[in-house]
Image (cartoon, rainbow, N blue to C red):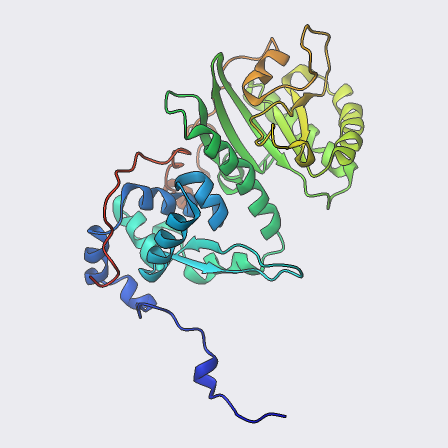
Length: 351
């Protein structure tokens, strides 16, 4: 039996801090943020602008020493309207909080580059729309892949690790007339750098469709004259085995197969000893005899699997000039490694 009723306003979610969307873009609020946002905060805002959405777990891997410090700082950024957040529904358990760029954060990024917020192509409703996008799981999966590489890079600031991470949107603006990779990355190792395109597979596409992507990468290699490896990350080893057979059939028919190096790996290969895509989980498509005890390579060793591959493919922001006015205002890709942080006391919201 219903014994009491709740007023409608009591059911609304309360927004702590009371900063409205309009107030978030006010001169006063921006002045207050100038004294509160650290270089790491601004780096996180740039990362959210580039990659649309990151979870609290991914942000912890990328930038924070502990879960407690992650939750505390993200809450402050949320109260200041620098970020917005949502939590997707799950049948079992609860999903981590997902974060997108907030109105105040967009204003900060625009001001840093001498732009208006409209020049960024940012709208808060569009940023939050990712919460209902059918590709949310795919986008988060790509984020998992790269933030785990960032986590591996953070202990070593001598140059080893992830040195570039482009989003699917940035890749589309540069290569979209030929192919749209899920991401582009560059990994620095002891013997040089490996640049790669990532194809992140969730198992929702047919293996025939997955393998035919090689045709588009072959056209890109022919157009640019640059051989860039394509890495396929699959959900299971069984799926990887099927994908390798389909990829091998297409790869064998390419006119210049050497211009499209391919390697595969699967999520279930990760374990207590191989915790990251940087570890020995990668299996080149064209297996060759070698003195290695394991057929799989770490990310830093993959270039050895393709001796003819140049150390650097030469992709940069100048590759594929912008095709429209909006692209010309796009921010440069953020560094994939967070800036050095100095321990200190953070002001409370409104202090």
